Image 1 (cartoon, rainbow, N blue to C red):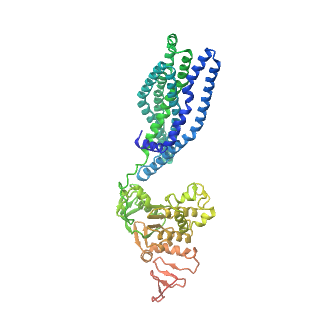
Image 2 (image 1 turned 60 degrees about the vertical axis):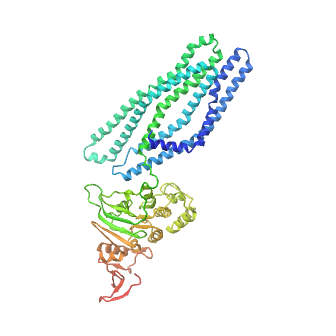
Image 3 (image 1 turned 180 degrees about the vertical axis):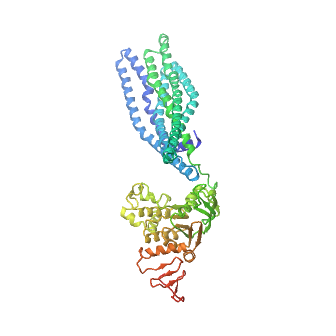
Length: 618
């Protein structure tokens, strides 16, 4: 098995050693009826033949008691097995999802559509086969050992012959195993290929129709299906060889015993009761156990080995020990010559961009819709890879920073806030599992979520997937509180407050501005720029960095944005502005309702051009 998959499996199982010990103990009790069955049958027959009915009856009653004890042990085993199986399934799902997401983030290739097949089929295969291993194979192995032990006590010569044939069967199976494994993996890869090609065909069906390529796409999928069917048939032929293994280990010992029975009885090696007991051990205990063992190992066992190998190949690369990747020593952000386009021939969305965000500062990024603000957020967080240039965090290139440290200390909150099924507490502490009650309370108060938690009945109230009982603004507050609690030192709000009213937005941004670290706001409202230390204006091929007043004076585009916003909203009251509100002309000059002009610094200019007192309202 692949090292990563095997390691994960062994680690999860190793953590449950005490549970496994109880499984072994109850397994011995469960198979006790098999171990004593031949001895008790032989005793009963010999006593019946000697007309000792009471002792024969006692032997049969003991057999019944042993069966009842075995049933009790079986009942105790199922909860113990579940305590091992379900954590393994959860660990593989988590590792697979992390691997797929990591690959999607780091790779420029299209998404791995076959990952759905691995998630839904291969992880379930691991779970089912582990269950089969603990339930069936465990029972088979213990039953086989119990049968051989009982047989050796009853008829040592028969046990010696049978044991030799069982070892021969195991050797034959081991010889067949590499070929079976290779064929199982070939079938698994063929199934993934079918899922990949079918998924690509379905997602690109419009393009195929537009290019009159339907038949080519169908033929491509057909070839994958035909190859999968051919490999499955080859596996079926190879698997049929297990019948020979079962014959050597389970049925041949019975034939040998029956052929030698006259001689064994004549020379007194066994009694008639012992012969019947030996046949019972072989036909009721050993042969069915071996048949099921080889059947399970040749199908489910190989599926598990191959699935664990394949899943391990898709897991995220394990993070190295601390120090193998760079750890940022500071959280200032420096962008140098950044250029990005969505395709080799596409017009760059960001071109030759450079600026610096000092640690602890507050930057607002503004610009018209579709200008590339969210794209820039993806570049700053390493979610997108620039064509040219680089992003430095604390002087270190994002690509060289330990991914765990980068994701721990950098947070991006998008406009679409996600709330997962569970309690509000679980949503809030997801990035800070050790957060105290006092820290949670401070976060709720800081971003303005306290009223929502009170309405729902506290932070232990349950919310459905997606936060169905929350409004869009309340979901954004949950996301804001989640990151506020986190250890992130660089926070980017990508229109993360778009569903809040201006007053709630101002409170949330102020909370993050007071919080230790660097804050970057992709501005949904121009009022966010008023509150920032610096403003980055994206203007097509160019970008301008400065304070709000500097940009209002120097950039017509920024003045237009401010004018449009000030025309519509009263920032103090969080409502549409009345006709008496202040306006800003495209040139950056502010006008009071009476027509008095204000310079960008707020100095009043009289109609004659003389400077007056600074308008206190502005």
